[in-house]
Image 1 (cartoon, one colour):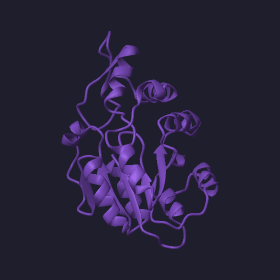
Image 2 (cartoon, helix red, strand yellow):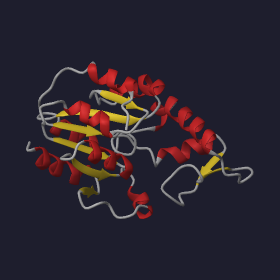
Image 3 (spheres, one colour):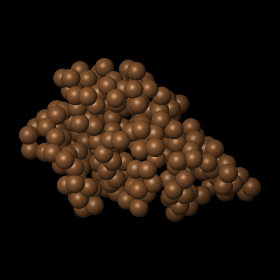
Length: 217
């Protein structure tokens, strides 16, 4: 699996840190996504049917019922990320949990989104008081997490709502502590059971002490 060169460049810009590493996904982990996105779609004349754990195949044009294809989904997502400050709030309990964990760990946010949206997301996170470093990637997350960790082998925890990203992390960082967290647990029903080495947490209240324990904080 290849690295994303732009992600690698962003990692190079970070200050060296040898504390335990906590890597966080953003959408539906730190910021709400599943709750606001259908409201955004409605303003554009679309509706979301949550019939499976994916967007493509579940977004219909309200007027015609036509299910839209991947290119249109990607374009709508792009519009949503451009306007994210109007729609996305902090997931419940996230700010408090990160403030506590950030005293003893390096926290880095790693979001899978086109790099062109990084500035808008950076501004929005700053406005919300979430001043942790932000990395964007358009490729698998595992290689970025391995690069972030560095050569010293410090403890690593990674939190994501997408099982595929957690598996990618496991493939690149064999001893990473993996946590599956969804700001909206309504979608859990569509997912197969998590692999045994991935810890499912209901919310940040449950996640924070478990992450602290995993990282030895």
